[in-house]
Length: 97
Image (cartoon, rainbow, N blue to C red; front, side, top):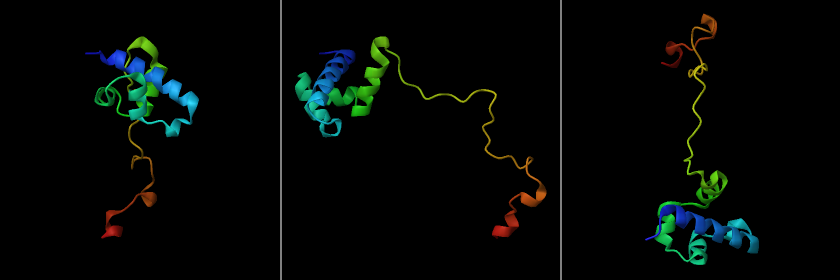
């Protein structure tokens, strides 16, 4: 059985070859799996979408996983604090009742 990194490397090579032949939107995961000579289920388990294949290509062979950026510790997570607004601009619950 092939390792996940081998599956992704072969799939990326096949995807780039298919992208040179026709527009990227016309290339499907099933065609990528056929060109790479791997099972579609194995490719789908490793990368369920074409953008994830491109993400693997952009990360290279570092093996890093994509993580969303964390907010900077000094920034506030609250969007609006009622202490910043004068009383005349605060939303009043009684207005919506």
